[in-house]
Length: 79
Image (tube, rainbow, N blue to C red; front, side, top):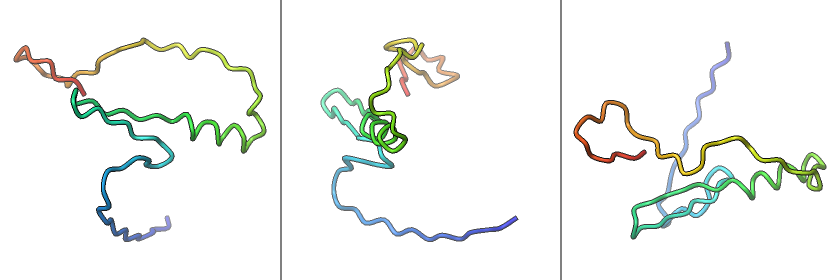
């Protein structure tokens, strides 16, 4: 097995707007952060010559709130 040692230095330059191909969206007033991958997905479609492909819906429950396990104190602890 090959090991790779990589050292990365981070420099604080303000708020993050994009990270790893995802757009970071913040609503500080409501305490909500979200990630959007549409730009990344579009680049992948273009890379593989599928930008004109037909889309289909992905089966997923909308507006699902994820909660931390073991939250028995009645507080709404949304991840």
